[in-house]
Image 1 (cartoon, protein in one colour):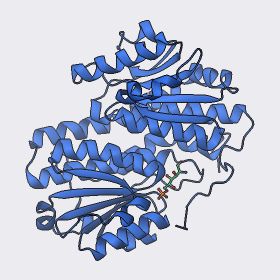
Image 2: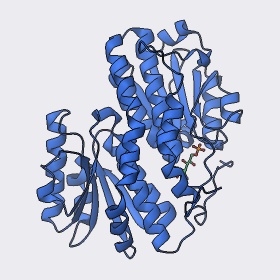
Image 3: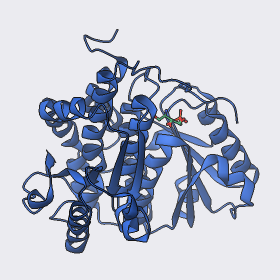
Length: 369
Ligand code: M6R
């Protein structure tokens, strides 16, 4: 069942071109119009939404942060992301014009379910982004947008994460279309860019040999840091979570701008730091800021391991190692930049001889609060 791969996680990493393609399939027409009628939620109600709250846990919450950036950019609706287990305990402000979007691979995560129930009781509309047909969270939500990643067996989430991000983009574009926030031509362009993603992920999978070698050489590391800015920030958090979960290595993800507010004190000679670099073709200052963060940690002795976009020559001077991903618009980059970090964690954990699919102390779905 592992399809010739050494673990389910490796298989699922390699399934990702398909997971993204299946999640996009049949949800837009040839004119570039989103057709999410499956949501069965009155479009008039969605037009009235004035606030979105994304609720999820773990990896799904990182997909939620990507969703926030995309939805705010395309829809101009204020969007918050919150860990589902924190939400209920702080008397959150929501009403019938609030849209709560929950994200859950399993659809059974108790923390997320309880948060959705609470939101419904308060009168909010609830949409679930979920990978498991007929599971509890979609059943208890007003509407569901399924991710079509196929069953995910490994405890560490990989293909479900990419599918969640993909579904969140579709939801964001759909809301923008309904509310007339962006031109239809722009929606068409984003959809065209999304449709190119599966082949780009395949390119990454096919060029990971040196990255795997690097991972094996780092099996004795005690701590690895991950930096990112904008949508690279949740990617950094996800890279760190993967390494903690399956390789049992202390790993932290930081917003790159936070460095000088504390974490930079951790950097000393030989400290490995992954840096997720935004496209140099995007907002100028964003790229330049992250490149200067690479310089800052490098100057203090860090080993700089950089994930950058093809053609980004600027990072070379300060990087011990660069993994290039194909060109793509900034907002969509997490679908690419996450993949090398997943591969790195899986390869390193396997080199340490760990059971990559069944890490200690963890269960695939967390059905207790
Ligand atoms: O099934 P869910 O998406 O609701 O699960 C949420 C988290 O428990 C899950 O993403 C967890 O963080 C994974 N083990 C991450 O790899």
